[in-house]
Length: 362
Ligand code: F6R
Image (cartoon, rainbow, N blue to C red; front, top):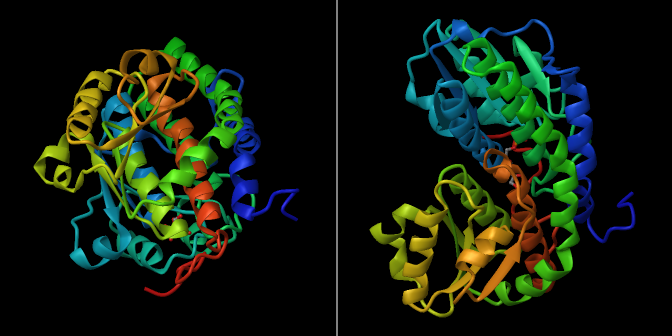
């Protein structure tokens, strides 16, 4: 049942190129995107409110960057347990979007019920389509990741991101912010993603070697800018939940506002930095860490490594990827690092202590 892998988590990480390809095949038709019925028209909405917990929440934070940059739509992202009790105003031009692998997370379901009768539409992005959240939505977008058994979410995250990216593209088309050739270029880039993911997975051995040293650390920091910031949060969550190592993710630019005080030669600092328009800024934050003796693990592409690997403790090289899709690809080294650190520590990877796969109580 684990398909020759030692853990479900390893199997689910390795499945990502395949399930992502399947998800794309489901949503792409000819030269366009085909969403399930009843369709949405993003010209009807002024804002999107996205609500979720944990990893699904970080998928929403990545999507916020996409919706704002590609479609010019305002997005607010909330943690379900906060949203549900805050009495946030939800008007008739607000689209309420809920992301949940299980579709049963109690706080997310309660947040959805709060929006019933207030929001223009309730849309959910779920893996389990026979779930409460799916049943109570006006429109359901399945992520088609297949059963996810490992408690730490992996393939559901990258499939959530993929569906949210398609939705951002659709929003841009509806709002006349994307020409047909730009849409086509984006869809082609997406079609190349499973192949790039295979390259990332092929580095598993190298990542395992780095993870062995990371597993000896007491604290680990993850840094990223732009849409790589939520990836830093996700990398830290993944590491802490399965290896029990204390980890925090920060927006690179926030470093000097406090967390840099934690940096010394025992703290691995994992910098997620594809060569995008923010690369130089991230690198300058990374150099501040190195100037204080921090052990930097730079995750970048060949061009980034040529420009910035000097002085880093270690460098992991990902294939070059269009910057907008980097959050999907860079999820894999973050997952593999957490996985191998947990294996090195001998923790229960698929069933980490104190955690449940589906959180059906608040
Ligand atoms: C982290 C993880 C959790 C879930 C969260 C939401 O690896 O798995 O943070 O993402 O409990 O669960 P769903 O998506 O089922 O609502």
